[in-house]
Length: 167
Image (cartoon, rainbow, N blue to C red):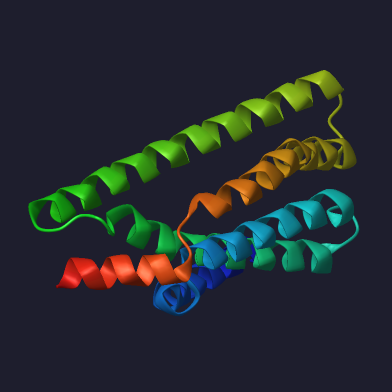
């Protein structure tokens, strides 16, 4: 149930993120999205075994974070292109996203299976800890990504570039 709810939240915030990019700018939206993802990972790591309500909250925050980032990333990826390049870029963006999804699932499952084999046990608590320990690795990566957000243009420069391309 929680995963389905996360997907619904992600889709809703994806649309809102695409609409808000002109009002807030890409830097702020991606920063808010990464903060939400980081917060959800921290919640998963520190409260994951303490009950369903914390898991639900963490997954909802994760859906908000991914949703806020998903829309603006598509807009940013194609913002400098026009005509036939714009059409082609949508296919390339789709392929890159699919490759990333496949690699993400593969990496996640290989990390989980290596954690499970190192545990050599089959109880539910050990499996949960093996699952949640994967998020510990990604927390420092997300902190580094937060600093890379500042490579995105500020709202003023983004809006001027869009209006320049329209004229």
